[in-house]
Length: 88
Image (cartoon, rainbow, N blue to C red; front, side):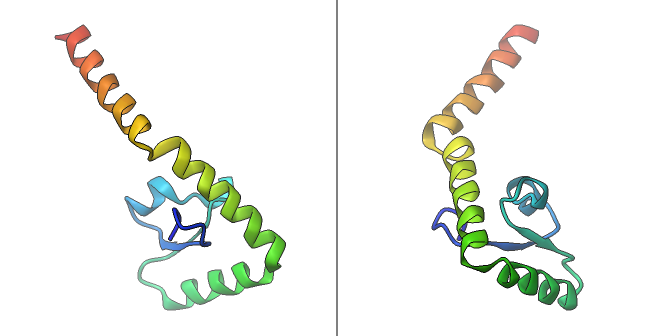
């Protein structure tokens, strides 16, 4: 959903919290064992209106482009190799 440009409400567990961070405005998280928490976050998202949801979409797409492109994955892999080779 995030890569499709849709606002996301995710559970507050890893790996969701590694991608969705309410503090940076990339989406919403709700307590995984609390249905009312999901309902509150849905209400918050809808209350933002069209412009607020558009802003979240822009931030979310930017995160996807920065962190989850093939180039970003390759760079992360190279960083691991460099670390292993330097500390061999």
